[in-house]
Image: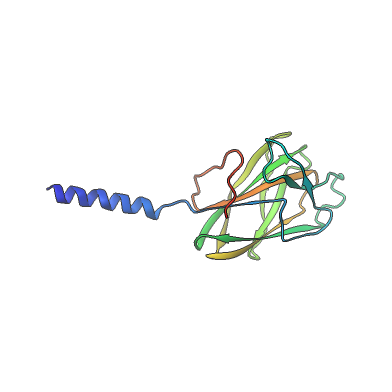
Length: 168
């Protein structure tokens, strides 16, 4: 009887291991390539990670649709991931970004009403990653946007908080 009970515990533990939330996090201000008007802003502070952030400067959306930043990152395993971005919106005219992963259709993140504060947006945008090298492209959808970090995870119910540890 004890043996069967121990087997049941092992089966439950094994199932939990299979449901591990794979995570990837990288700095937005460190793209492999960047096109104007997007730009890197350097600085230090308790509210930003990695010594800066990426900005699409406010210009009343005159340059909307122009410019992009491209990132290469490694995923621990292949599968469906949910995309998040740690962002700062100045106003409602600049409160969203568009990302594309591995050439997929662009996903819109944001369109929320949290202004003048760093916060995470996303979680509904699902993308497919390969184990190993992948590419994310941030496109200029609206101006007046700042992005500090990107975070991708396999758990649809997970919500990142604060500054995340960068994936090596």
